[in-house]
Image 1: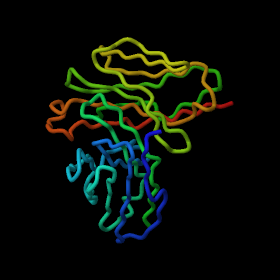
Image 2: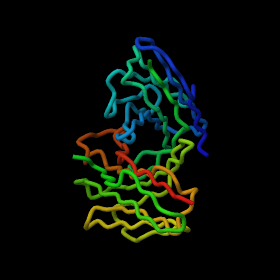
Image 3: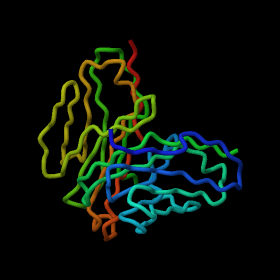
Image 4: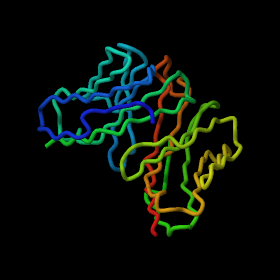
Length: 114
Length: 123
């Protein structure tokens, strides 16, 4: 298994509160990604990182921000959580550049916003 | 338009039956890669296979086989003699070069996933 740890694994919080999800990898991979998974939508990319302090937006980035201050950690922040952000969040990593690189996923974080 | 279409939302088969999961993709690029991932009920996503656009040779791995046909833009996945442990959601995904996505730069290699097919194998 790829060394990817997501924390927390489960979280319940209230609308309007800030939430930060953490992805930690031990593979020293350059590329890291945050996805959300919702019924009927598959996985959709939120943000990704191609190096320390290098990040960019994905398909569904509104309402989310990310930070990567170290190679091993990629943080996803919901500044003011809304019920529409209730989802399962997956972190993924890949080692090298190129469309041929498979991404390896963490076990996911189930986030419920009431 | 969807770039990756998995038209079968849910499939149920009886154990030992063969089952094929369909994946149709759309791209203007000549160089691209296709992937299949498995998500069992426990929730993790497991990488199964990668194919590139220049290699149309079918691949077999145990009870799993993949049929890649550029002429029909399809990358179908067949499970032979299905087992209960095959019950999962299966995702097909496409990765294109940045130019095909109108982007450039190191961060532009992204996966586009289909919506998944839920396979239930009944004992």
